Image (tube, rainbow, N blue to C red):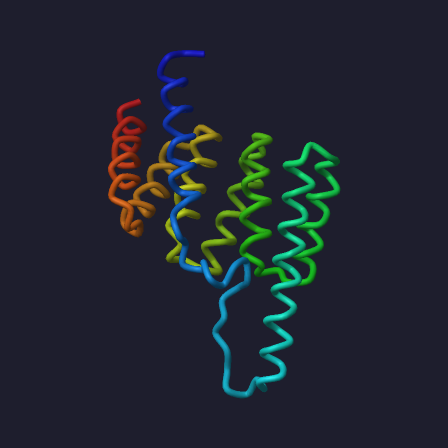
Length: 174
């Protein structure tokens, strides 16, 4: 592995850790989708809806336990897909499937998933960062830079912003 590739890998890992501890806009909403509610929904319906999302969030957590526990990863992945079958806008399930796609170098799938996150919440800086990572994994520097620039414009984390700005410069120079 070339020195520049090793540096980029280490840099990526550090940024991922930083981003994982950053709060996202839907923190507090857990993995649920955009909660724009209309007045025509009854209180009982909203309560049932919230309960359903708590159940789906629990399914996502169980899926991650299976995947990260060294068990049968496909069983966990199927749980995540089942969550999306119940709620196609479940941010937590989409994000985790995107992470898993990245881990297995399925960058095209990861891109589709992170773009889906941005359709649901176009202000989520973490999704732009992950999208940039996926594009970079494909060798698409132009789109990686574009996604990273969107991340920089949205993030409130100055440390992450500076690190990604440095990364943009490196991609622009290579």
